[in-house]
Image (cartoon, rainbow, N blue to C red; front, side, top):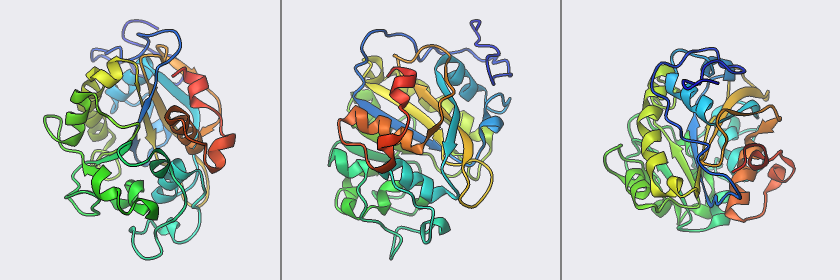
Amino acid sequence: MNALGKATEDLTVTVTIPLTSYCGQRTGAPTTSKVMVIYEENHDYSSILGSPSAPRINAIAQSCGAATHYQALTHPSLPNYLASTSGRSYDSSPWTSDCEPTGNCVTSNNNIFNQVGPSRWKGYVESMSSNCSTSGPNVLARHNPAEYYTDLSATCAVDDVPLGTTSSGALRTDVNAGTLPTFATVTPNAIHDMHDGSIAQGDAWLSKWMPIITSGPDYQSGHLTVLIVWDEGSGSGNVPSRVLMLAISPYVSHGARSATAFTHYSLLKAAEDVAGVPELGAAASAHSLRSAFGF
């Protein structure tokens, strides 16, 4: 791979923007103690990797780690978000209707938010009108899993917060102060997560946030790993789809690739292992992202 990170496996686009080296700065035993999951939406692996509409995402993939056989579990969005935070399947009614977190569309199942406990998790939701709210411009509640767990009814009002902007607000403040929680979810609004917006719009959003996140003390100290993942690819029904998952950490080698069969349960396994809590449900038997990418 050359300085611009040209063509490797599954990477056919030439990146002409400057390539920031987010990964590969550290060796030895990793000191990872925090995981941030950034959720993107509704695109297959093949529509992102190599796409000229996603130059920054491709640059990150070339600089850091990419899972080449990562599968979303089902369709539509909500069952994937809940599976990735609880280790359980939600491929049945009412979850498959992408319902709002009210009535019977809430669950008492255990989850990583509850496992790590109050003050050790936070959900950052772009454009959300207020804490733990389902409203706001281009806000889709089904992309914010914390709101669906009944055991978080009290802590959601404190720990599920509007994201803010790149210049001010909750995420920028916590990044700058080095006070990111043990487990964080970042939910762009429906334009910036590619659900209603374009690949280019999602790529541009990430291009603004990733330099900020990776320049913060949590990342620079080697404590933070960022996982960018797409909730589902094309298709419908209870059928897996191949999606992209990027692993970003100072301990991840430049251009690292793994063809291991990962799923959203693997993502949960990694976050729980970093947090030092038991692996819930199917996470216990999932393949390890940490072993594959070294964070």
